[in-house]
Length: 264
Image (cartoon, rainbow, N blue to C red; front, side, top):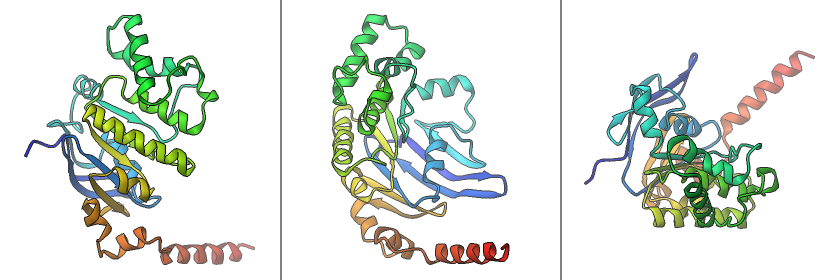
C-alpha cells in the first residue's frame, strides 16, 4: 500500500482551557475522498483548519506527503501550500476582484506564467466548474451555488495534489447541492486527487465519500467505508445518523432558563 498523503497522529487542539480535538489519529490515502461529518461544535472545522496549517495543534503531528507541517519552517510550508487547494464554506471570494481575477490570484502569486497563459488557465478552470463566460463578473453578481463553483475553480488553480472542501453544499437548495456533489465527483475523476470534505449533509457524504470519519465532541466516534459507518452501533453515531435530539442540550436549555428567570 502506498504512503498516505495526510497522516494525523494523536492530534490535539486547545483554545485556552478548552481542548477541542482530543487525540485524533487517522490518514488520508492517495486519490481517496475522506468525508468528515459531525454535528455543530463537534470540532470538524477546527480539524480542517489544522490539516491545512491555519491552526497550530497543541500536541500531535500532521504529516502531508511525509512532512510534519506542525514543525515545518515557513519556506517548506510555502511549498506545501502550493500543492493543496482549499474551498471555504462561504467561498471567501475577494469582492473587489472579478471572478477571473480571484481565480488568477494563486497563479500570479506562486508562478511566473505569462498573463496570457494565466488568462487561458482561468477560462479552463471556469469551464471545468460550469462557469464559462463568468470571468468578468463580480462575486456579488453570483448566486450561492455559483460562488461555491468559483471557489472550487480557485482552489484548483495550481493543480493541487490535495483538495479541501469546507461544507461545500451548506446553505444551498437540494438541486443546487446535488450539482455541487456531482461537481466534486467529476473533479475527483478528472484530477485523480485526494480530497478531504467537511460536511454535516449526510446525503452528500454518502454519495461522495470513499471513507468517512464521524467526529463527536472532539473524538472519532466512527471511521471507515461508508457502509461500515452507516451500520455502526455506537450510540452517538446512531444519534447523529438517525437525527435523534440530544437530551444534554435540552438540559442546558433548562439550566439557562432557570438562571435567566433567577435574574428577573
